Image (cartoon, rainbow, N blue to C red; front, side):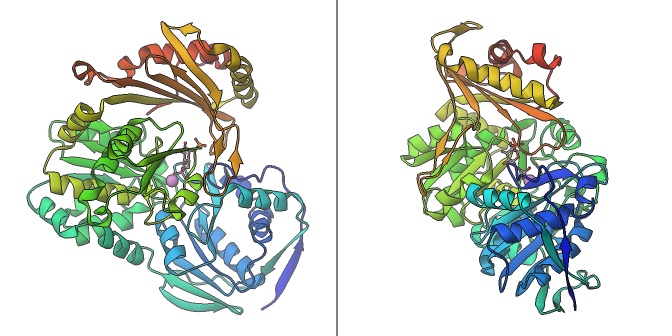
Length: 543
Ligand code: VG1
Ligand code: CO
């Protein structure tokens, strides 16, 4: 088979963000766009000659076409083998697991995660390294540099590889190993959790509802929750992956998973509800009439993980992204273990997990995971919750009430202002940055500011430093506001405002979050001038 060298030029804007390169699908489909980026990945990692890679995606529009291009480019550059999920599907945690288990050199995941899919929506590609985790910043910097000096790419002229059947085929000299996307992942879950106990829980009448949001977790949920654990098939909503996710955002939060929320808040609500995102790495947990914020979920999992067989030895430490609430910090303190605070994005947890410093990690954006893979893992979080519920035999709301009773409650909410003008967003952040030094000691909405800074992270394992990771304002009364711009959007800028208020008084534990946080919300607006600058009078998404 012939390898063609195609002349090309650098394309602007191929800088990987929080989680890979995400753009409008039509941009990815423009001539050379995908090819340039894939070649830049190869160049940035020192080539793929003789290497083994893992490839899969969340099944969104263009997933199948992109997979064929990537395979032909891997073959053209001399890769020895690519392990591909059947039909080019792999959830992000399943891809991470395969990279680790099969000792691959790395992998490409085709996904824009929680972003909507379709010809007019979003597509994305990200590179994961040999530990199974997202490429750290030095690697993405080399990839980006390669996008800026690219002059040609290599691609093999060949027919499509049949990815519909499990088994091995050749593409030129390269071996293509098409694997069942679920099998290895399911085996991993069985090794961590007490499936018999969860099966008994379901058999006892405990009812669940899982919303796969028309995305990649449908087949995983069916194999694990239904076939292995005995949930009824109709307990899985939107279980068939579709290229445009049924027209919705596959983002598991109360806004985009509203139909699940309606079920869980209704009169006949089941005991437990959960949802996952486009690529299966996020989770939303909701009990009957009781939404659990991702930050609280991380804290509850940290406090109870030892009840599951995979974590019976306890936790080495925990880590959370900076904007995530401090609920887990309180658990770590009580347990006498380390709690690390990292920038947003799973890539920052990789070193801590590899070094054995953290066992559990989480983000306020519905990402929770552990050292079983190097990505956040939606179904894993659901199974850990179920294992805990099977042991404790309590309702989700009872667990939350007990947890808050022990540790206090960190009221928490994130307000997103989407697709705002990029200049307006940059100016808003710059104005905040400019006054950071003068804020300490000031009183806003009756709350005294005790700290104000821009978060920078020094990785305790490799000593690397990441600056400009969000502006954080702390108040003397235990409140905190964080401002940052999203690194996963594809339209204008998204301003994320993270709001938190600690409450220790047992009589004040059951308030509505938005009400409890109203002074903090007002303070955020007065500090940053959000409505004045953006012209928006309310956020687009509240989680
Ligand atoms: C968002 C979340 C972040 C998460 C990232 C990738 O990033 O805030 O916590 O790690 O998405 O998740 P940003 O830069 O838009 O705030 V996923 O499931 O979209 O890969
Ligand atoms: Co995701």
